[in-house]
Length: 423
Image 1 (cartoon, one colour):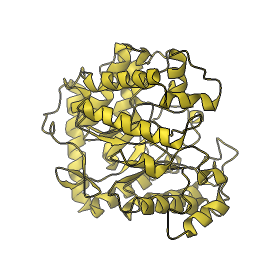
Image 2: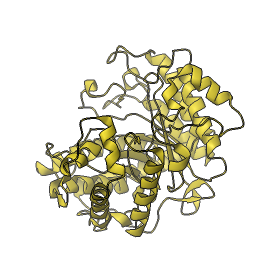
Image 3: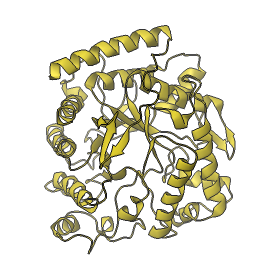
Image 4: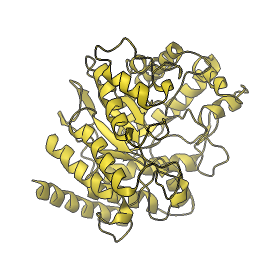
């Protein structure tokens, strides 16, 4: 069965490469086919959706620059999508925003003013994903400062943004919420220059992720949850046909919410207390009520786990959130996980062979149904300097997937095959 699936996929990729090289669009046979949720599972055409994936946040930025320089096809996007399609991966989580005015790839220059070049980069990412038979989870904002983030909204609207607690205004103040809604409206009504569709109608977009890793510092967990519900409602009112995801890490005050406290007791002694004590001013259960896909992230080294406990930390983190959602029928995505590479960061705990064993265990959480998807951070491309990200991995051109320099590439292929068999 695996050989048949691989043969069909390789034939499809060859067809895509011909279409990409000649500039023709693929026949549009999937315009009405959107990934949906049925009985707590992701489906496509009422069949289980094989939810294997990875992160590649930089795609809009790279595509914008290449197209502005005169290219008709982004080499970076083409390389990444071609390789992922060949590996059998179905989904890519990437940025659907760029709020950094200092970047030549910016989308939102200021409120109500958008860069056509920046938007064309995102147009291209969406169109190329469809050509390669991939789906996208597009984050539409960032709590952190990368690509602008919440701080840029505060600066645009003349709010203080020197301290972490200043960010709480973003979730509370009318002018800031209205500004963010204006960007959601621009996104949904944007007509893709390559597909001719509005973004709200793009079948290659699996989900709109409301924010990467939000906290409610400076306000409250309840106000952050209210913001989630308000913005999810806004996307639906704007006619988005795709799903809505949270993008959060999964923090909260979980004491008293589970009958079995063993998971909490382990995490309490293995990691930092702020994962579980509510101090991040965000509540996973509340935030998941208004979205279609709940989210967790896991970085045990950053959370203070020892080498003996790191593997179990993410396994327990996933099982804890699986149990919290047991009655909700909301799919759970482990949207980011990672271990540091010791060649790039002296905080790293593991050599490659150990990291591979741990990644295999974390990917298997999706194969076992503990989470619906498990996406490692992050997939890179040949020309990207490895120093730019301490977690990245690359399938280097001309090398077999099993080559040591490729780190986890063969694990992605094995995982994608296992997910297909499970579905």
